[in-house]
Amino acid sequence: MARGRPINADVPAAEEPARPAESKPKPDSPTPSAPPQPLPSARPTRRPIPGALKAIAGLIVLALVFIVAAILGGRGGEEEAPSTPAPAVTGGGPGDESAAAETARQLGYPSFATNNTTRVGGADPASNAAAVALAVYPSADPGQRPDAVTLVDGGRWQDAVAAAVLMAVPVRAPLLVSSASGLPEATEQALSALAPAGSQGTGGAQAFAVGGVADSGGLETTAVGGVDPARTAAAIAALRDRLAGKPPAHIVVAPLEAPDFAAPAAAWAARSGDPVLFAEADALPAATATALRRHPKAPVYVLGPSTAISSEVVRAIGKTSSEVRRVSGEDPVTNAIALARYDGGEFGWNINDPGHGFVVARSGSPLDAAVAAPLSASGTWGPLLLTDNAATLPAALRDYMLDVKPGYTTDPTRAFYNHVWVIGDEEAIDVNQQAEIDELAELAKAGGEEQ
Image 1 (cartoon, rainbow, N blue to C red):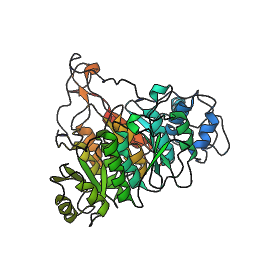
Image 2 (cartoon, one colour):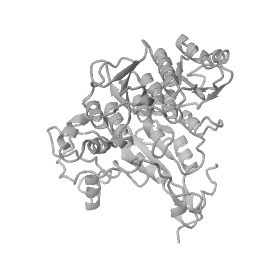
Image 3 (tube, rainbow, N blue to C red):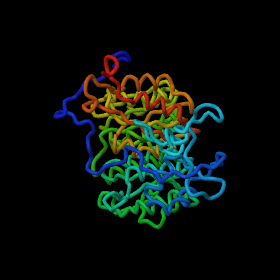
Image 4 (cartoon, rainbow, N blue to C red):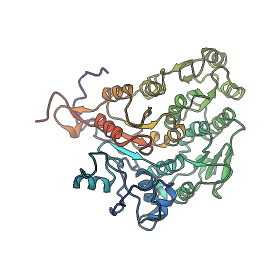
């Protein structure tokens, strides 16, 4: 779809609803926050999210605490305060702030949400993972809780990328962050709210502990992993085979040593159930080769350019697998777009038109990108896209979003819509870039100004 093409026309109500509904609603729009509190005279020093959660825990239910606190930026004051301050709205110089801007600041706009974007703005991956899990599973009643969760080591992003496949059917387990030394407070409180009970689809497990994770909060736990990321990914793929009861439709091989090129695989794995294995730039790990031999008929898609996974490695995969194809861009931003656009029949997002969900994260933060994968497998299902700068939207990403920008000719209620989840606080993606993303996702009138 060329950048200058006409945007989509109206769609009759009988053929295409404005927004498809799911059996259980997921929060695609911001959860109302607690009543605005007076702001401190100076911007407070950032604190981890659990302190802020403690301060407002008595005001709203635990699930809403996580969603609001993490989305608003995961910040606390230098001392315990009655609420988490909303992030500042950029504007004029000192003394030039209007009453409207102050109201926007109190409400968290635009950092909290805009017409077409919702931010999960935790200060760290554990906070973002907890917020994403509770956005997908609000947990206000037992029917809104997952059967299991997946705990990944915060020190190894590869484990999170590979474990994202456990968010696919039949397991549907969101990711939370842990470590060998224990659970972050954000994870502990998320586990308390999510209260996974296990099921036949999870093999009775309430939690999957991946890699070096030792503490699962006392849940019935299935440990999965190996001494290195390639072996752990292979073990996760084997677990996926056992729980799904069938071989995978496809396999993704991602770069072991290039996190920005590998991160988009997490979103696709969560959406599709295709396992993710890893390859070095110039070598195929033995664990990966063994896992590929289990499914010689499954098409393999290599994610990333030849600088991340060489042509020699692709040929080595071809000795085992009947079909091998590469999906890539020359840099992390265009690589993520390539997977979003890719149409391989049953493989690839094939998002080349309006009416979709998207997740935008910062390159250089692969763990944040990976733990956001449940958003790509629920609500407004959509691919992970990457921005490489806190303040400026990359030109390639802007062009892509223009290409899929929604529009209408006469009746906006019969049009398609885009929605974008923004992952990370303002140091990762600032409010000006979020506002630009919102503008690019906004429904537009085709053929001139609306009459």
